[in-house]
Structure formats: structure tokens, C-alpha cells
Image (tube, rainbow, N blue to C red; front, side, top):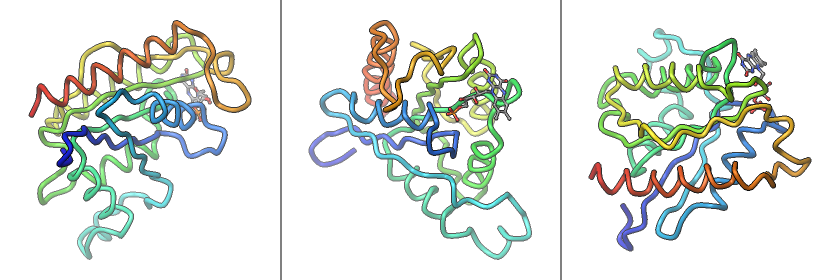
Length: 186
Ligand SMILES: Cc1cc2nc3c(=O)[nH]c(=O)nc-3n(C[C@H](O)[C@H](O)[C@H](O)COP(=O)(O)O)c2cc1C
């Protein structure tokens, strides 16, 4: 937590594509962060596929950066689509890298999860698989309110903005609850 008492969240998107709805959702979350909370983002694109032989030589720079940023943050916000009913490989890969000893940075870290997907369940299955990973890593994932945006292609405009008020209300409620969750878990 910063000296000013601001809650500092690190946001990670589980999609690499430029026009990603989830990257747009993360940007929206940054804009909508409640007073007293900031959300910075970390781009996982430069993280290479996990290879234990490489790790034995030391963490690659992008992984070191991610681990340091997670450690320094008061909490995480993961914003991800669902791929084949599960976690996108690039996101799972980043989590796998960051989770390796020593001092894996997810331990005791408050975490919020939001997502948007093309399907009718808004990426629910991806979110539940993520939760399962964080059981092992002892990440403290907030249970609710959940944000799963279905039929994402109908919810975002060309600028990555959302006009549907009910969806905006869910996002707002999640961010407000995440701030309270971080303060509660201190
Ligand atoms: C490999 C792959 C698998 C996908 N599997 C699912 C799925 O299981 N459920 C779903 O709702 N959408 C699925 N989709 C569609 C994504 O939800 C859609 O492409 C979405 O826009 C991806 O998020 P993004 O816009 O942040 O990149 C899949 C897309 C890809 C590329």
C-alpha cells in the first residue's frame, strides 16, 4: 500500500490481441477504479513459453518484472477470456512462470477476476479453472461479485467502450469490492 493509503492493483489481461475485449475491459477498469485505488497493467506478451531448463539459468527479464510487480502490488486483477472452456495458454504460461520458487508472489495476494468472452457464459469456465490454480498458489481470490461478460462482441463498441449500464454496474461493483477485499485481507 502506498504512503497515501492508496490500494495499488496490478492488472493482467489474458489476451494478446490488439483489439481484445479483455484488454479493453482492463483499460475500462483502470478508468473506473474507485477513489483510493489505482490499477496499473502488465503486458504478458514478452513472456516466453515455460521451460524449466531456462528457469534453471534464472528468470527471464519479463518474468522477473512480472514477479516484482506482483510482489509490489496490494492485489491483482486478472481480466481474461475463455479458450476451449479454460484459461488461455498465454495467461496460464505467465502464471506458471511467476509461480516458481523462491517466494512465489501469489501467496496471500488478494485477487479479482473479470472476463469477457464470445460465448453465452462469458468465460465462466476459464474463471473457475483460474480459481483452481490459485487454490494451490494460495492466492486469495474474491468470490463475488463475479463479472462474466457474455457475447462480448455485442457489448463493446469500436473504441472498446461499454454502454450497457447493467454491465458497467457489475464492473463498478467488482472494483469497489476488490478494494474492500484488499483492505480486509491486510
Ligand atoms: C483458441 C480459442 C478458443 C476459444 N474458446 C472459447 C470458449 O471456450 N468459450 C468462449 O466463450 N469463447 C471462446 N473463444 C472465443 C473468445 O471468447 C473470443 O475470441 C474473445 O473475443 C477472446 O477474447 P479477446 O477479445 O479478449 O481476445 C475462443 C477463442 C479462441 C481463439
